[in-house]
Length: 292
Image (tube, rainbow, N blue to C red; front, side, top):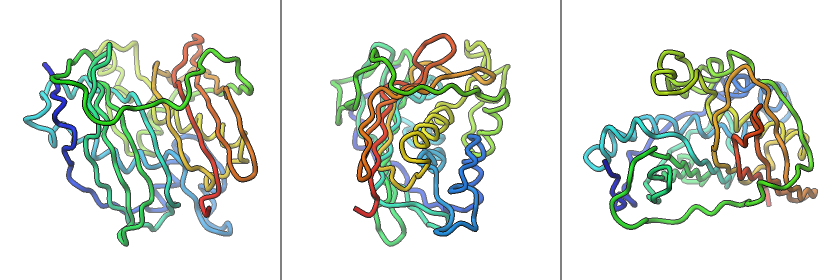
C-alpha cells in the first residue's frame, strides 16, 4: 500500500459556500469562546470570525478526498489519515455574509518515519476574486509508504524551540462533552471524536478531542494574552499536531517566544497535555493590522 508522489499538482473539485452568522457564532460557542467579537451582533463593526474558523469550510473537501483521489490513492490508506499539520495565512478579513470559493490541490507528498505526509493547499477567494486566505492541511497516512521521490514544496516549521522554558503559561480544562459540542458547532464529523466504540475499535483508549478544537481553544487564549482577543490582527497561524488531547482533562497553553508591538507580533506556542507531553508543537501566531 503506497501513495504515489506524482499526485502533486492534482486539483480537487472547487467548492462554494456561504459564511453565515449562525455558522461563525456556533464555531465560537463550540470552543467555549464567549468573546463578544464573535457572538454580539450589536457591536460596532459587526461580528468577527475566529482565526481557526476556515477549518470548517475546508472540512467537506477533506471528507471527500478519498473519492476525489480514487484510483490514485489506495482506498484503505484513506482510513489511516490523521491531521498532522495546519497553516492558515490571512490576506483579507472574513465576515458573516461573505460568499467564498475554495480551490484546492495537492501541494506536496513526502515520506516520514510515521507514514506518508500529504499536504493539501486551499485558496479561498470571494466571488469577486479577492484573495481571503490560504490554508495548508497536512494529512499523515499512518504506516503508509510513498512511491517515488518526495515531491512538492517542503513544509518549514516556524519554530524549533520546544525545549525552551515558557514565558507565559495558562491551564484550562477540556469539558467532558467538548468533542460533541465542537462536532455540532464546527460541522466537522469523524467518529473517533464522538463514538467510544469506534475510537476503541481503532486502538484509541477512548474519544479524543478534535485537533482543530484544541488548536482553536489554544489560539483563543494566546490571542487574549497578546492582543486582547482581537482576531482582526491575525495574519498567520500554524502548528503541528503531535499527541492526542482527551476530553475531561486539564491542559496547558505556553508561549515560548513573544515579540509583541502595536503594529506587529509573533508568538511561538505549544499545548501540553496532563502527562507533560506536547500535544500541539511548533505553534506560530503572527499578528498585524490587516489594513496594512
